[in-house]
Image (cartoon, one colour):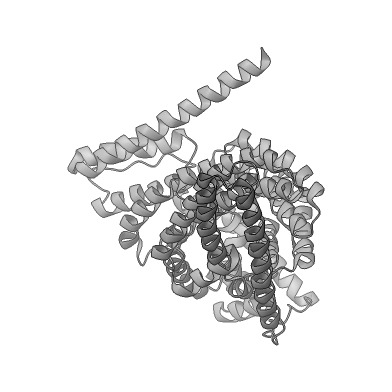
Length: 540
C-alpha cells in the first residue's frame, strides 16, 4: 500500500511539472506572436510562472509605459534560456539564448547568457560552438579581474574540452581555475573544480591523482552539509574507482546515488550514473544485470539529445548483449554507428579522431562486417564453423583494441611528461597592517549597508587613503579590485542574512546595498552557483 501511495505521489508531481512546462511553452509562443500592451501582459504572466515555480527570487513585472520593448524581450528570453536549461531541454535553451544574446551585449547580463549558451551546446555535444561561447564569457570575466568568476568560466571550458575528448587541453584550464579559486574563500566553487579535475585525470588514465582530487571534493561537501552535491561527487568517485578496478566499491556508491537521482529528478546525473553502474557490473561479468542500467541511461540521453553520453550507453549495451543476444547487440552497434555519423556533423576532425581512438570505431566496423559473415554461415547451417569464426574474430578484435589502447596511452604519457607550464605563485601571508586595513574596509562596508550607501570614496576616506591608494593596497593584498572586494563582502553578508527566514529576499538585497532584486539574484548565483532562494532552502 505504501509503495502504491509513493508511486501515485511521484506520478502526480511529474504530471504537475509537465503541465507547468506546457503552460510556459504556450505563454512563450503567445509572447512571440504578440505586441504592445498584450505582449507586456503575457511577459508578466511568464515571469509569474517562473516565480511560482520558485525559479526567480522575486516577481519581476514590466510596465507598458516605462519599460522599453527590448528590455522586456531581453529579460523574457534570458530567463527562458535559464528555465529550459534547468529543465534539461538544451535545444530550447540554445534557441532562446541566441535570441537573448544580441540584447544582452554590453550589459552585465551578457556573461551569464554566454555561459548558459556554452553549457547548452556542450550538453548537445556541439563542442566547437560551446567553446566559442565559453571563451567569449571568459574574456568578459577576465576583464572584470574577479578570480572567482574567472575560475567558473575556466571550469566550463575544461568541461567542454573534456567532453570533446581532449583531456590535455582540459587539464590546462582546470589547473588555472584551481589556482585562481585559491585566492578567494568559496568552498562550493572549489568542490566543483576538484570534481572536474578528477574527471580530467580519470580521462588521462591517472586515476590515483583523480582519486586525490575527488576525495578533496567529497570532504568539502561533507563539511558544507550538502548531501545532494555529495551524491554528485560520489558518482564522480565511482568512475575513478572503476578505473582503479575497484568495482565493488564503485557499485556500492552507485547503489546509493542512483535512487537519489531518481528521487530528485536529476535526469542527467541519473543517466551518467546508470552508465557507470553498467560498466562496473560488466567488468564483473554480470552482463545481464548491466543491461537495464544501460537501457535507462540510453532513454534519458535520447530524450535530452546528448549524443556523446548516448554513445557510451549504446557501447555498453552492445558489449552486454553480445554473449546473450547477438541480434540485439547488432542493433545497438548500428545505433552506435548512426551516432558516430551525427558527431561528424557536430565536431571538428581532431575531436573525431580522438573519439575514434576512444571508442575503437574501426574495430567495431570490422566486427560488424564479420557479424554479417557469421549470419550467412548460420543461414547455410554451418553453426559449428560460425561459432569458431566468431570466437576467432572476437579474439582478433580484442587484440587489436589492446594494441590501439596501448598506443593511445603511450601518446598520452609522452605528452604528460612534457615540461609543464609554471604555475602562479601563491599569495603571501598578510601582515598585521594588511589585516587591519581589510578589517577597516569590511567595517566601513557594513556601516554603509546599514545606511544604504556603500561608496568607495567614503570607504577610502574612512581608512585615510585616496581612492587610488586604497585600490592599489586592496589589489596587492587580495588580487582583486576594491569594488570586487566590496561586492564579495556584501554577498557574504547576504548569505548570512538569508538564514533569517523572516527577511524577504528583496529585503536582504536592499540591506546589502543592491538597487534591485534581479541584479542581486544574478550576482549571488554567479558567485555561489545557486540562487538566494535555493541557498536558503538548502540551509534548512
